[in-house]
Image 1 (cartoon, rainbow, N blue to C red):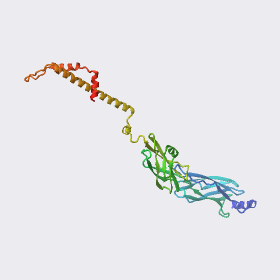
Image 2 (image 1 turned 60 degrees about the vertical axis):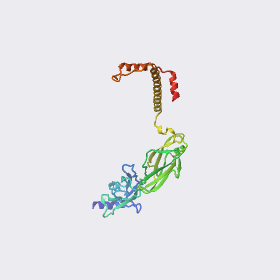
Image 3 (image 1 turned 90 degrees about the vertical axis):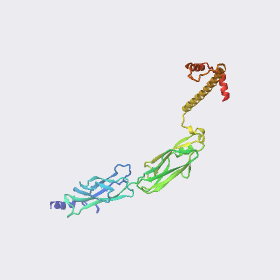
Length: 357
């Protein structure tokens, strides 16, 4: 009753500015809300928004209650759009609202919301009877930002061995891992370098496909490797896949080594021993030369022994061996080996042996 009497006394002194600014009231405003980034690179998608409430009464504190209506489900949440604030006449108060969401959700998602500010008490008078409640609200929509992500997959990344002038086909598989339909493009990051080295392409130098979210395409790139090479050539085919929606997104890259055999080395006599080093060749040559020299010496000694034996047989008397006693005295072996010591190899023996060969 006392509050009502006070209200009746002060009503004549309260100015009426216009129909939209009553004796008591509230206004609410909020900053523009940015889109929420839900890309895989973000640890916890969230975005903040600052709101301001004002007590429009010329006199008297006001108790202002904040409530909301939110359309988000399990993929997004609004926090902080509730509570109660006491604001002096003509004063204001700020509060922050936070929006969170799940990662990698579709950019087609959007969430409408409304934040409501209500004067529940003024001059310690409850705003129901006899004075009605006054309120104001802010409406907006939380939008999910678009992000792009390409995933490139080449099953066989082993070294491709080809001959100069051969045609080479690379099979590509790429997927749209973004959150919106996207044009995924696959190309060679070292294209100019390959062209300078003599690579040419059969058809397009790149492939591209408009893909829905999580859709995959399979394409191929054909090329002709350089010809007329003086020596073998080793290069890398550096493939990259990118998003058209989000040029700043990370690239998906894969390298394929290519070993090109030159025309001059193809079919040559050294193909079978390409793995043998120069030192090994020298070693094998030395061994072969030593074997040949050994055979020459054996041949010369054999010829000398035959000649010596023949000449000695002509001059020596025939030794008769008693059939009843065939034991050969040990002195005979000594005489045989002593004869080898008497053999002299003359220089002409080499010439005679080489003539026979």
